[in-house]
Amino acid sequence: MGVSTTLPWYPSWNLDIFFLTIIGIIALVLLIFGILTAYFGKGKARAAGGGMIGGAVILAFITYYLSDFTFHVSLVYDIILGAFFYLIAAIIGIVIGLLIFLAAIMKT
Image (tube, rainbow, N blue to C red; front, side, top):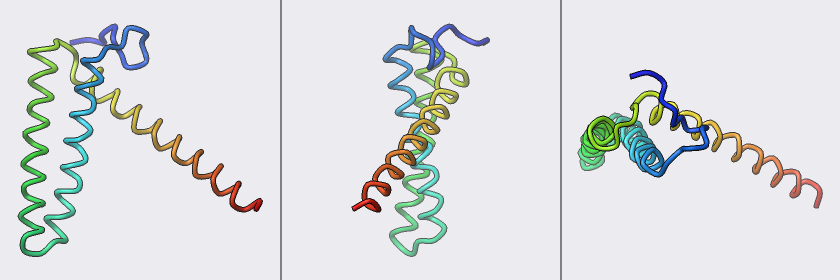
């Protein structure tokens, strides 16, 4: 699949890509926190970490299946690239908001 005409910044961006991006980001977060919990946790926390890793794998498979066979969008160009840009945008927004908050507190 080549670059589709529904890239996240393209005007015809649709709700299918938005839905799949959310599921993909949830899978990524579950994977990261599951690995950390399984590695640093003890007892039941390790089991919960393993469950999060398993849930991440299931959600990743669902994202892949829905993107290819149901919505017919490109997994890499529409979902993964979109998630990357939205995470970067969210981090930039959080940093700017935090700097404004700190400036307001420092002035008072």
